[in-house]
Length: 314
Image (cartoon, rainbow, N blue to C red; front, side, top):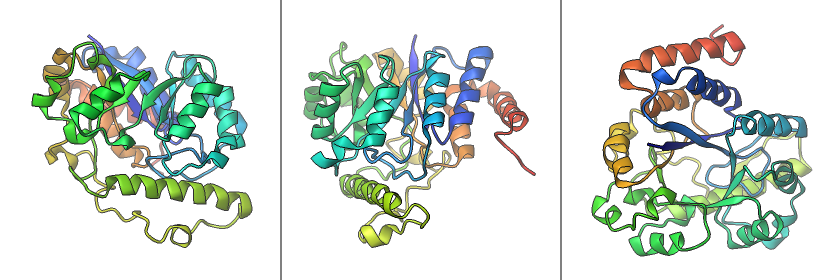
């Protein structure tokens, strides 16, 4: 049995994710059967190709090299969220994103894609990267999902509005099921009519942010100046692990092991790139730790984080 989890933010959650990976390795008795870290996903800011969540900040080359080495030497891929739907051809030559792809171009790391022009660019210039078709494409019909699975993608992320539509999931051919990824803990309102527009707005914001810090590196970024119709104040974006469980798109850990895995599905994404680290940690415990071990696993990880300086209550 393989239950493969894609976990958020190898950059912002670097210490948390490293300590969690080490705990999974050294304390397997805490965890449910078959748990694997399939990837840590995200970007190194400032990445103009980034999509899905606007991410600010700046990473230097030394940190980029450290993160790639740290996770790759443990056999864990980094998966770059290069899913900005607002990209233009001029953005393909971005020096920072190209530098990152060159540094991580070792056959292990991956990229998630949305924009056809960026996908084509990566396929031509970085053919060793495995590509994932992004949830931002909103593959919310069986026909659209099956069509995408026929293409050359390592993984296809299904729109989470289909998560618990078992009458449709049963119609997916068995050979496709290991390549389908479920976003298990989505905070967005099911069936939200603004979701695609929100993804595009986020892409516009990311481009504006990157252009701003090049010109004004010491001035704060004002999103309203660049994108007055932004969705930054989406009422759903701050939902935590306990708030989302009532949503019809939510996939519980029991359902993963009792329904999805027996059906042949094995890829599950946990969102949380801009979430509180405490919410991310609790989500990890909820999905991957055995229910009877959650308290001890949580305490062990928090204590390790405190001892390493990754967490302080002082």
